Image (cartoon, rainbow, N blue to C red; front, side, top):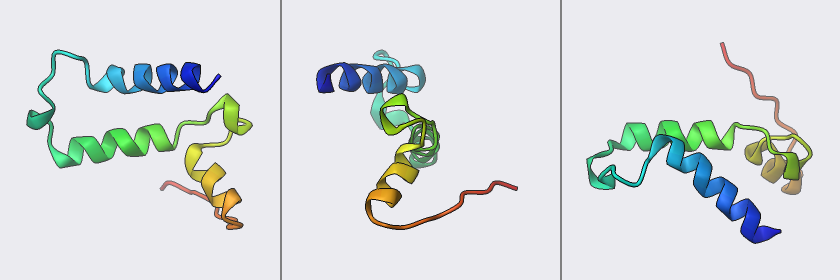
Amino acid sequence: MAERRNRKANGRLRRWLPRHIDIHKVSDEEIQDIVLTTDLTPRKCHGFKTPFRAILKELGKDVQIRFS
């Protein structure tokens, strides 16, 4: 099961970073955008919560995320 999740996560990253792209040419800002996008995408394995909200719940924090 963990291997399958890892493959899915790699597939999600490959949407933004295909194998032919030189990672050294990707800006820090672009990397941060990719990280934010993936961390704020709900996952079935987290009960359709985002990884960010799932880790906060594990830590006992209740945070509401709002975008303006």
